[in-house]
Amino acid sequence: MRGKSLFLLLLFSLALLILSACYGREKETSTMDIHSLPLSVTNEGEVISGGTLKVALVTDSPFQGIFLAELYEDAFDAEIFGYASNSLFEIDGDFLVKDTGIAKLDVHPEQNKATVTIRKGVKWSDGLPLTVDDLIYSYEIIGHPDYTGIRYDGSSQNIVGMTEYHEGKAKTISGIKKINDQTIDITFKKITPAIYSIGDGLWGYAAPKHQLQSIAVKDLLSSEAVRKNPVTLGAFKFDKVINGESVQFVANENYYKGKPKLEKVVVQAVPSTSVSEALKAGKYDIATPFPTNQFDSVKNLSNVAILGRPEMAYSYLGFKLGTFDTSKKINVYDSSSKMNEPKLLQAIAYGMDIETVTEVIYQGLHKRANSLIPPVFSFYDASLKGYTYDAKKAQVLLDEAGFIDIDGDGYRENQKGEKLVIQLAAMAGSDVDEVIVAYYRQNWADIGLNVELTTGRLIEFNNFYQKVQSDDPEIDMFMAAWGTGTNPSPSGLYAKEAAFNFSRFVSEDLTKILEDIDSEKSMVADYRSKAFRIWQDYMDEQAIIIPMYFRTEIIPVNKRVKNYNVDYQNGTELQDIELTNNVPFQ
Figure (cartoon, rainbow, N blue to C red):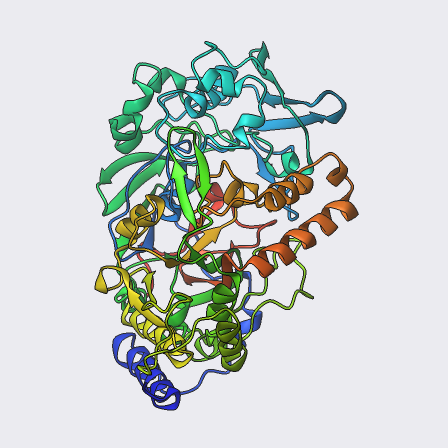
């Protein structure tokens, strides 16, 4: 087995070489404190009229181009769709619904009911009025028997009558009632604190019924109404889509907050290997999501301001422990699965030298995560110990579980004395991603685990998630990430009915814990906080999902963008963005 010290030296050398050669790293050391990056920038200069904001969507794969909230599945489509979003509600700094959006939410816990009231005079981008029929239609899409998306889950089934509608036993969703042209009532099986963060089955978007109702629900995904010319409610409207490459938006003159000051927004897919040079050359105003391992390549640019904030996300290592029953829409746990051994999973977690990767590759912009709740949420518990790198402890756990190197080749056999080969799926990206995965594989080799790559290489983003979601038998464990959204409840990711529960782990204890988090008792903040801690402890012990990184989001902004703020509570709204020059500064 190759020595860890040699491989660690290689990691450092490769990391420095990649950062220097590929991303144009400045030789001098910056004095910028990466832990206190500003949330906003004020750029001098007189604003111009209109102008085009140029956005780099940093992705090494073509984006899918699914522009309907009820159907899109990944962060790249969500990022694009955000410029024209059909969102109904706005949230405050605690990620709770407030009354300043298109819709107002009134909750009646004693009746298990919520009332949603939309503003008068709100129009779609094609000029037709928004009605509550559009709100109801969103629920009907998600609950339809022919629905092809992943949002029909335990939360949506909390709406009275949704299950019967989905099973074809009812023509309408009985729990959703139209009161008048501005108001609907939604009756739930239970009301929990999650509803105030757009949970419990409450849906936060509207769907343009006048555009979509003539299209069969099963055909929506491939329709031009979703792919090419969506009708939307946001600050900008779709103007031109080049599949997988770029989207051009123009100002929505019907936007309820007023026509945007910008004339256009152009979002273009840009490979991670070239985005830093593109920013330096003044080709883009904003790059998102910017690779944190390239921080050195942009931190000293004179034409760019660097903003930062904690992400509502975490990276994780997951283990395949079952499959998803597509007919019943439930996760099916397999107690005889290859990876169903807690001590093996714990050893894999202790065997990862994440601390070195965060320091060398991510320069402190990532830190090892101790929980499946990001620190941006109040329910995050900093006292949770989590996993830290401890190769000796990992080896002891493997010995105790009966994974022993019998034939002396440096790799452990399983409890039956058979060769143990663990297949890892990881996403392709930059050369740095190759280095990181190779380093972790060496970490595991150092404790006697033979970890090979599914397909023999890192997997392109779209193919990766297709394989993970379809429970490809060649995947034993996988490296992925979750954007949590505004609702910290873990049910949407880890419940029995959650399509996003990619580990497919299900247990009575987990179900009870998740139900307790979203129970009537949890309407009391202290009770819910304790329920969250119980869940975090349980997931830590089971080790079915290993939290890897909490991340700082880096937002490079060209200095022609005026008064730009990325704070979750007081951030600059799209309609207010202004520019001080006709093209980005170089």
